[in-house]
Image: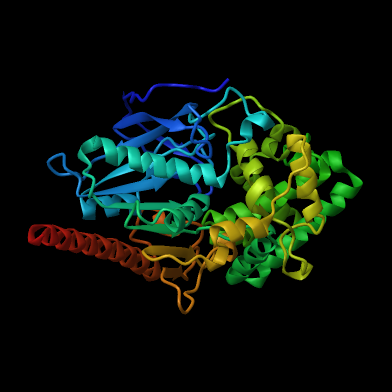
Length: 466
């Protein structure tokens, strides 16, 4: 049943702290003072549709002076339950710009649910196009109604990391008139089905620590595959993954290393592996890492078939998005010597997973997606791409400025500089490269604001002359 509601805002007081695990790693979330609900169109493609759903968003106005924001920062959430945001660049920008922060939860995730279940027919409105239009409709409605004392000419800056980083880039590409600029952190703007570069980067990042680290990962992998062939029950039980099929189990094993690298713990992972002297000791350490980094249950194909809505889950929705539009399937590097994944993790595994999970023959047309949203050829002004040198997702993003392009690029090369590193809260231990990148991003934000103010002043002067 679709949820149809009137345009109404419901407020609640939220003052406690919570934690979440997602693509950004473990992060403390600052609960907003107010959480509200926006009446969002269900289908932006159909102008006659009168169906809506409740989309959740959060408001942070800590740095607004005299209840009059000088700017708006829109934080785009993605494939997770968005209870708020963590301390970091977003709050730094708000403080500098005296801005209000609005945080918009993505449709179908968390509490922003259009339907009563996640059956395949009900997922038909879960795609990039609808998500971008959600953002546009939200901004236009806030502007038109003057909520939170936001004036029609108040400048908006949008940002996001990972898939929301891509949404930030694509939104600037499609709706440049609604904001003055955006930050696309670790933005996966390149749709790619067979994404073996991810595995290659995990290998290269581990190699940054030492050849010994790579060798021990690969030796443990070989032991696991040998044991899986001879005694699958025992080896799966060691990882508390007895319910997984063999190929699902190998996918889970690969994500142990990937999770450590992507979660800014590459150095820690390699240091832990260097402590032991025997294969058994390295193997035991990997078991401990598995307990810290992976949710074994979520790797099972039956888990993905569960259509019951659970606000804490996102696997079925996100896998659907990868299966219909973007891919990002983490296959093994064809060069086994430069791989941390089993060579059994090939594209056919993910193709079968897509069809089995949703009971329809679906698979992403990466060329179509890249043609529609620009891919690596996207070219818009007032857009920043930022990436960390350890990030396995960087090969689906833009890491170098190309001649003739109008965007800015920040490539942050330092130890453990991984996924969405620039969005994280600053620390005295941050490497100089990271600190400099954040400072440059904030300086660009200020430059956009100054340009906007100059344009507004010129507009007023021209109106006086007329």
